[in-house]
Image 1 (cartoon, rainbow, N blue to C red):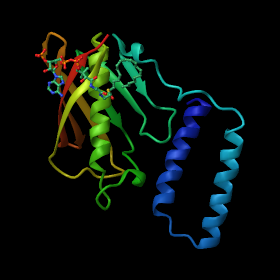
Image 2 (image 1 turned 30 degrees about the vertical axis):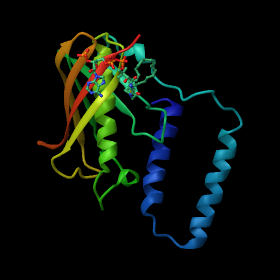
Image 3 (image 1 turned 135 degrees about the vertical axis):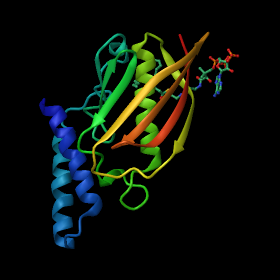
Length: 185
Ligand SMILES: CCCCC/C=C\C/C=C\C/C=C\C/C=C\CCCC(=O)SCCNC(=O)CCNC(=O)[C@H](O)C(C)(C)COP(=O)(O)OP(=O)(O)OC[C@H]1O[C@@H](n2cnc3c(N)ncnc32)[C@H](O)[C@@H]1OP(=O)(O)O
């Protein structure tokens, strides 16, 4: 793992630790001071935008990474095989992504599915934006357990590409989505 990616992962771990820490105020104050020191160090040189895998690199690729270097978002490595997309999150998502107590916020599930489905459409060489994303929450998604995301293209007509996807917790599809993507440019 490169240094930038390792830092992003360390900050995600930090966010999940902060979200549920129960240490005393002096320790919280010390942690805040340390965090601000780090921010100062990292602000010494800043990029114009978040570094990311170019969108075009998804076309025909076997693997595609999304926001692996951005700690504010769950990074995702997708695998494209036989026309379908899959991603695994081996350690699950931490407590920073909680919605209901101990469970994943629904918006994060929708985000992951949108990312996977839009990347799948791009993988097939169609430059498109999400026109519609319909999400069904079938069961609560646990935090800190391995997750899997799958996506398929199920229809195409003119500029429109129809997709379906699911977020899996073990053998249970906890979130299902239908995404309509419309070709642009
Ligand atoms: C994953 C990493 C992404 C990183 C990207 C970074 C850089 C890439 C740069 C450029 C690449 C370009 C795009 C890829 C970017 C990101 C993908 C990630 C996913 C997103 O984060 S993306 C953000 C959220 N997304 C939007 O910001 C869309 C806002 N919106 C619009 O830009 C327009 O609204 C548009 C273009 C959708 C349509 O507008 P339009 O004028 O071109 O076309 P029109 O309205 O004629 O629709 C044509 C046919 O689609 C049907 N249709 C349209 N909308 C529908 C709906 N909602 N429900 C059901 N049917 C719908 C019509 O009914 C008609 O169907 P028919 O042909 O059968 O009559």
